Image (cartoon, rainbow, N blue to C red; front, side):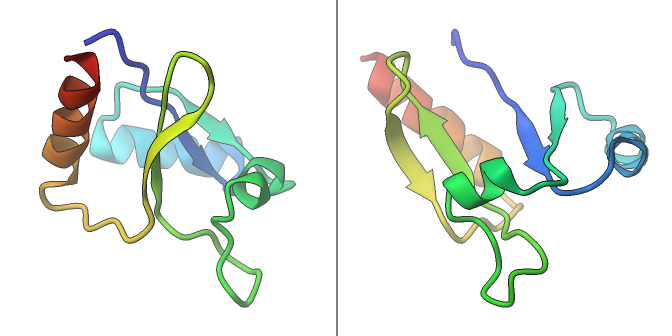
Length: 89
């Protein structure tokens, strides 16, 4: 579908690697310990400690085409794939 999936978390790389191994992820993860990316996308929790699980679909021009601010893991991948397909038509 000509799409790239990238995960971002505030975890250190070694913590991310354990997560990647545990869930057998096949996409790259970015360690954002400074929370620069997390803050740029407004994904930090109200208390400023952790990040919320969010998904952003970014078009080829770098514009956010769609955002999911309350992500439920169950079925979410299918929802994102549907949105990518809609944009491709």
